[in-house]
Every structure is written in C-alpha cells, then in structure tokens.
Amino acid sequence: RRTIEGDWIWLVAKVVSYIDSPVPGIIVHEAIVKNENVAVIVSRITRIASLLLQAVESSLFGSEVGNNTGGDSVDASQDEAVEIQAMLLNAAENLGIDLSNSDNPLRELMEAAANGDSMWGGDVLTSRGGTGEGRARDGKKSMDIVDHLKSGAALDLSKIILTEGEVKLVTLVLTGRLQIEDLGPLLYLALNSPEMDLVAATDEFYSLSEQQLKANSHAQSPSEMVLLQPPPLAVINLSFTDIGDYGM
Image (cartoon, rainbow, N blue to C red; front, side, top):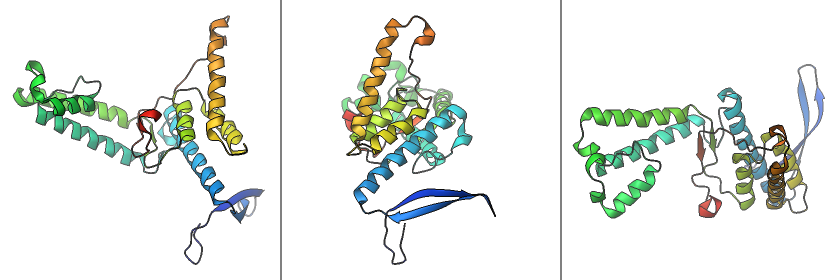
C-alpha cells in the first residue's frame, strides 16, 4: 500500500471478526511487514495460485466464474492471439506457404525462411498461385481456429518471471496431477515450511501422484484407479516468463 509520503510498503492483513450490522462485513487487522523478502514470496505464490484457480474454474464451470485470469484481461489475450494468427498468415502468404493443415505453423515458417521457399512446391503454393476463393477458404479455416480458442478458458501468466517452484506448481495443475481443490493444502504446506520451499512441496506431491499412478496396475476395478484429469484450457500464455526450454 502507498503511504501519505508516497512510499510503497508491504502489509499483512488478518480477518479478526465478522459483523452483521449495520451491513455485513469483516474487521481486518493490518500490520507493516518486517521481512519484505517473505512478503514478496507469499505475494508471488498466492498470486500465481489465484491465476491457476480462476483459469481452471473458468474452464470447468464457464467464463462467468472469472473473466480475468492474468495481469491483462481475457479480451486482451484474445486480441493478442488474433494478432499472432494474422502475423503468421501474412508471413505464410509472403512465402507462398499453406499452413491450413500445419501442426506447427511457426516452426514451418522458420524453416522456410532459413532454407528458402524452393522446398515448397506444387500444391502448397496456394497463396501465390491459387485463386482468391481458395485463399478465402484458408483464411476462414484459420479464423475458425482462433474463434474456437477465444471461446475457451485462458491461463495468462505473461510478464511474470517464474521460478523453478512456480513452474512445477503450474505443471502439476496443468497435467492434472494436482486437482484444484488440493491447491490450498499444498500452498499451506509450502508456506509453513522452514524456508517456504515451494520446490520441495511440489516434488513431494509429484512423488505422491507417481505412487498413486503406479498403484493402478494393482487396482481390482476401474473405480479404484487414479486418472489424470488435466483442465480443458484453450490458451496458455507463457510469454515473457523466462520459462525457457528446461521449463517446457
């Protein structure tokens, strides 16, 4: 919070009681944080956890649960996705490449730019030699994909430099190893450890999930099996997170 002098300070808040009249509310006790390093760690972990919670709940129960799953709005993320799609299509048209059936359009564009477009022959040169109707069909198909992505839930972690523990936390949730209802207990375990070690807490939970999955081979019926249930997210934005190849 900002002080009267204009300086920013960290505060810790605790709900001490509830009131019913004259209107329902809570009484909060605030105090200045003495250890700012601890405040930063707690703030980061809870912030990322809240983004995960909002995104997963939105994917499971609809967009009305939370329309903002990141530092920017979902509309901003969708606009960015449309811009990226348009950029790829424009680059493909300049190179004479058909990306309508491509699984990895960005990689194909990079390879085409590096090797020259002579490797693209015959049927794929639809943007230069094809008819306007064919280009329109390709454009419509690409926009259908963008519309599909825009209609789904988005997890926006952009512009948050993720640490190793935070990457592991995100991975546990996205792979379905950590159900969203278990997110709170895991964070409680991490924040109450001596060094607030999120890496150790996530590794412990990962090992536990591995043991549960291995136990599937001894299950007597399908109902006894533990299955991974990744959340059905449409978009995951990890730009400017410094996640790197190791994180991926």
